[in-house]
Image (cartoon, rainbow, N blue to C red; front, top):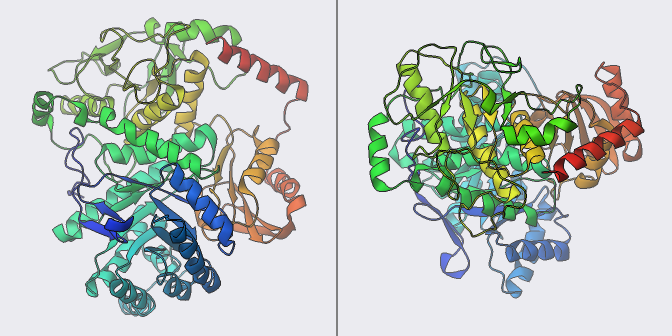
Length: 639
């Protein structure tokens, strides 16, 4: 595909979009797109029929800065109760716009549109019952299917037009219709084409007040989908410049959820894409807004927007073909080389974790031979060519590891993309060492940062003082390193923005796992909960993790209901899905294996299922695990 998804892979330019009006902007509504700031949103986790709890959660979200609140409406009764929720909120002088989340029930959408400012529809299940049927559609049969879909969807479009409502056309990886699956497969292209089918219906009725979303629990897939969507919109024509909502669905909780979200959302924001965002965490919803705000605050410093005008102007002369295929992930080919200490990188080797000498000195005494999380090379001990990619350079051979020199007046993402691009022009495939940061505001630019004990940590609002507060270091490193890994760039990584030695080492491995580059622990896909959820997501996820977190390389999905369950966990080994109140269905991949298991027994049956498929190993004795936790805590405390 020759069309681009953004203006430049080096220069930051926010994607120009048309404006979408959400409610009455003079009375608490919003305008999304255009030159307006990115909007932060979240979702309620309670039963939509519980008016008091919906109001309480909404007010709690608004209090921490949420600008758009989504509420599930799985039935007509739920949709009808939106009237009471809205009335109570407005009586309390809360004007925040609401989004009704619709799956499977067009009649629920027709009820919800009466009461809320936005209706979200999923093209994969709005007018289709997913049967996983295999069929080779003729063009005539496909056209008949599209006509059927328009008959189901057009009434909602016309009602939105009449009531001045907005739509979100939101596809989810894994919840595509059988029609799309048979023609395009469960692919980014299939997700995009599914959304475009519904967009064309909107346009045929002269309705343009809508935005798109393309969500996946896999950050790489999510990034590819949004890039492809924007490229396809560019192909359709200049008036297809609709805003987009960004999100990594079912990101999970804790560090893992934040890292996945920062990789997916942060990467696209740095490329100038995105008008609204949600960080989906299996935690209390207000915590999502804090992460949204922190992530948005990093974008100016992570992009060329932070450059002086003359520096940005200088960079324009390097613009040209992307140094990677933005629509199909492929790791950049390099020769295999050996680092000091015997570790190999490049070629078919996994992406390696490098640390500074200062970090090595602190963590090495606590590392045991069997540990998965350990430094694989020390930065100061091997030969690495530090290059300023804005200048002309030569490398004598492809077996030389290269990196960007500290102090280069570029944000890290742009600098490493430029390095990869120039190496390609030189006909070189040298392995690349990625750094999460190449500039430090409070440290000499030519010296690597090695924070010492007792150094002050920057607090929110203090700009880019170093070292960074840990939660900010996590987001910045994830956005930078994760973005480049999703481009296929990088053979080893070095984290320096996180001041703690033990924390920086763990962060490096967690980023590699979230980006799909390594698997050193159990991987979890966990939805963030909503009114459709049939059990307590946080409690159950913790229970599942307690039994399975020792299963290195196994991926387990914990899904509150069936809406996105089978599809979103298609790349998981095993799935734990709410099937009915108090009942759990267990999956292998996207295939249901056991049904209606009482919730009290479900975790045990999940373990049995893992054992039946040869993926179970017994955990270490409790004494050994306690010793390991004590050593880990001591390692972290020493930093």
